[in-house]
Image 1 (cartoon, rainbow, N blue to C red):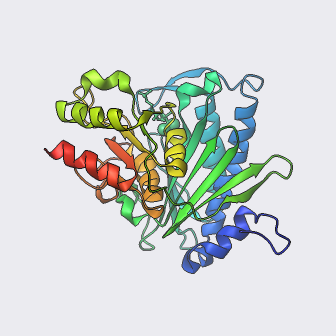
Image 2: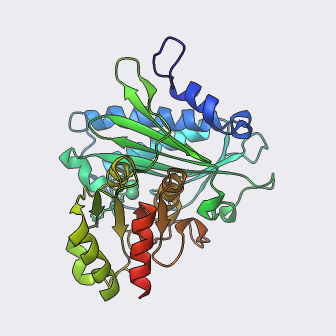
Length: 325
Ligand code: AHG
Ligand code: MN
Ligand code: MN
């Protein structure tokens, strides 16, 4: 959308004009603004990573059993502080933190945010696109927030955001029925409305999976991917947000299956699969575990993993049907 003079609207003005009125009235813009502030910080560190001491790892192991990268830790700090300080978030959960962060039980802090501060960490040191991913929920009542409050099925999200730090930095926001993209303008430091009402194209343009894991897939998944291989080209960045953003804009299907070594796959339900499947569905796509809609899964644990198949709804459905054969 543009301002009256034809220039693209800022993130704040565009979301204020398009998000559900109840969210706008209840501090949703404050949460999106806090995410944008953290994203500008991560963007600045990413663009100068080798010069800003942001390469390599911290030597620490996170709850995922993965080595924490320096930028993972910096991104965690950036978003934990911007979200904690914004005055609208009651609690947050982060991929890099074993425990949730409880900010305030006040009723004027109605939001809960689960996030992946830096997605695609294996690509940081080689200057390949990375991202950040956010699931946003409203508290269902004013009772004190506990761990259980954060274990909500993805269909209860009121919004979701991801940021892709690529050849340009794009922040994508979804609320009920609408997905919009905002490109960071280095000149003004503003996220400007660049992608209006994103809808996933009807035609699937590529499939996206780590073919190197093929030997560990169950036979029915091997057969399903063989069919995709004969119908589409392969694109795989190794950063979920980069692969997802391409599939959302050009059409495509992304898969990270469970396999004999990791039955639940690698990706996390709370802050990777749920937010991206929420966005996919608002843009006309679909997201499945292979046996059920991702957004219907009732989380048991904050960091639980899930198999993920997300993208064009007809192709997701075809894969799910193959897996059931
Ligand atoms: P994260 O960096 O947040 O741990 O996420 C990495 C994920 C995801 O971004 C990507 O799709 C996947 O790891 C790639 O895994 P493989 O290297 O096993 O293909
Ligand atoms: Mn990730
Ligand atoms: Mn991550």
